[in-house]
Image (cartoon, rainbow, N blue to C red; front, side, top):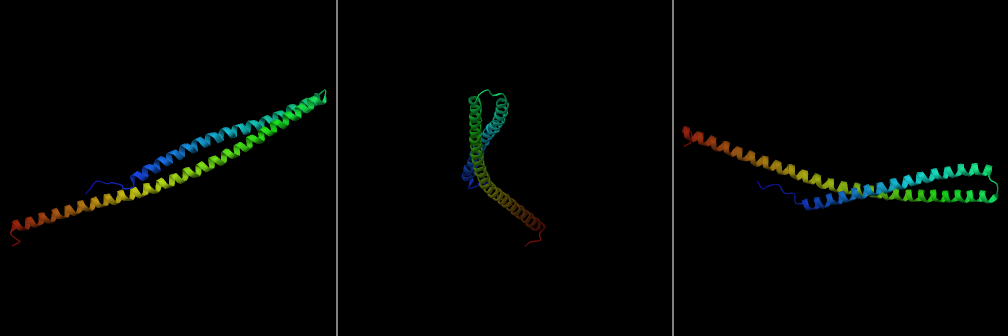
Length: 154
């Protein structure tokens, strides 16, 4: 029997490479999202700190310009926090898209893996049947030879 050859092996290799690329893209997107999420968290903490400092400063403020500066500073911190939230949300959406692409690539590769495994099992079954057929033929020939030598077959 000829050696096993999976005809769709080149396609399987392409799908494996596509899956690996999708996994790398997902890992990158995950890292970028985590950085954006960390920046968002830090910006939220900065807003809280700014509010606390402004509250303390307003109790001891000596002129209106100082209060205005703190109010503008807090507004800037809040804008920064809102921008970081927007960026983190966008990066999360990017990560989710990358995750969907990686999952689809994995399913496509697994489908070909199953097809290859099924073809491999069929090949092994064919080899087993051919071997059994050869053994049966050998047994038949031995039996016929033994009968012929015993003079039972004329």
